[in-house]
Length: 161
Picture 1 (cartoon, rainbow, N blue to C red):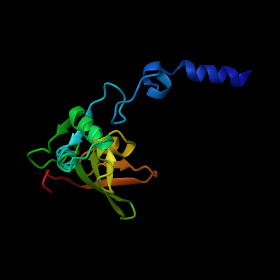
Picture 2: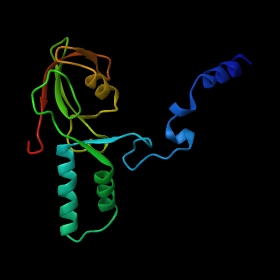
Picture 3: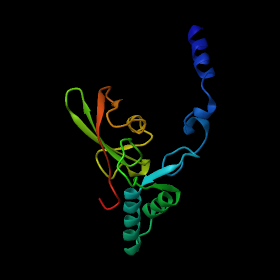
C-alpha cells in the first residue's frame, strides 16, 4: 500500500509537458529534438552537410541519406562563430578543461545532428554541453564521470578550419 501511494505521489508531481515525447505521445523531429526545440547547427556542420548532399546528388544517388540531409539543412538554425575572441563559452566553441589531477579534455559544443563528425563533440543539450554553455574561462564544471574540471581554453573555429 505504501509503495502504491509513493508511486502515485511521484507521478503526481511530474508535469505532463516535461515528459519525454515517447511517453507524452508527441513525435520527435528528424534530429531527435522534441517538437518546438530549435535545431542548432554550427556553420562548420552545415558546410559538411551541404558538401555531403552535393556529393550524393552529383553521383545521382537517391535514398534516405539525401532526405535526411535535406531535412537537417531545412530545419537547422546555423550559428556562426563570434567575430571576436570571447571569455564565455558559446555554441560551437571548442573548450579545453583541466581536472584537479592535471588531466585535460577538449569538447566542441555542436548540434545533435553533428555528433558523428568528430570524437570530442558534445551536444548542446547534453549535461556536459549545458554545463559548458553556462560557464566562462576559469569556471569549474562537473564532467559526466563526476570529476570537476576548470575551463582553461575557449576557441572558436571557422567553417574552413
